[in-house]
Each structure stands twice: as structure tokens, then as C-alpha cells.
Image 1 (spheres, rainbow, N blue to C red):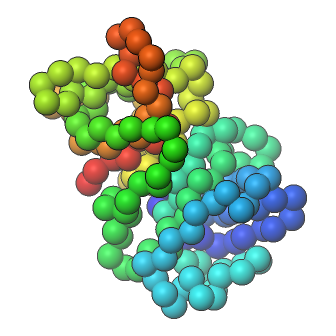
Image 2 (image 1 turned 135 degrees about the vertical axis):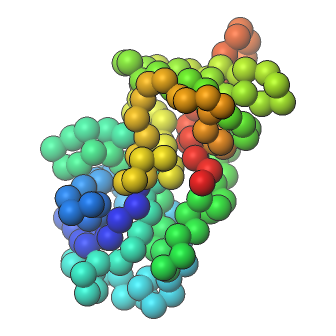
Length: 183
């Protein structure tokens, strides 16, 4: 999700406040050391510390695992400090041990209690499944605020990169961990 990072609240872990289209969205983690920070804006990242960010906020993109709590909408996995040219769509995905990667066209995204994804790769439909939406992080979603809406995907589909844990058999290729939309 992209916006202006306005606050880093370091009490009880870390809560990030991101201003998106005039609304404040919060992300919380009890383990802030697990967040990967990347900067494309050297001036802004040197000034970041607990508390309010400089000026009216710092342009940022947050990759998160959806998890509705009283503290926010999800757990932040990475924070990218952006310059005026948003490069987040080309940002390398984190290396996660035991995962594989595939690029293709997302043709189905069903989030009814679980996450079911179909991606066309080299002419074949690959099926991915996670038993909980909270296990999948979505990055650079096609909506204006960087999110994605579950439901039918218009043809021909949306270009994505999927990081997944391979399954040991059956028709499911694996469990999606990160779905990065390409702009």
C-alpha cells in the first residue's frame, strides 16, 4: 500500500501510520526487527526515527500481511521509502527460504475465508491456495491505494509475481506467501 508515512509509534512493538487518500491506515507488529526497510529516498530515510516523520510525511510503500486488529489492518513485512518516482513495482521480492517464484497472469482471486488464486504461466493455469487470507501479503495492488479487491479478474488478467511454498502433490501448486502486482 502506498501513501505518506506520518508516524512510527514504537510502543508495544511498532505501529506505522500511513496517510492514504486522506485517511490514516495503521499497521502493527510486535516484532519490528522482522521488517525489511529499503530506501529510494536517501534524504527521507536518514531522518526516520520513532515519532512523527519529517514535514507532512515521507512517501512510502508498505508490504503487509492482512490481519485486522485494534492496532491496524495488518502486519508490516517491508517498508520502502520512495522518491517522487515510485519504483516499488520493480522492487525485488524478499528471499524467503523454502519458497519458489512464478510470474504470470492472475485470472482468479477468491478470498472467501481462504485465498484461492489462478495464475496462467506458459499457457497453463496454476492453482495456489492458502487456508487464511492473513497468510498472504499483497504488494502494489491495482487499486489507487495499492490494495487489491477480491473477486473476478477481467480478461486477460493482471501481471503478477507469486512467491509460494510448493505443495507436495495434488492439483495445488503451492501456498502463496506474496503476490506482487506488476504495473
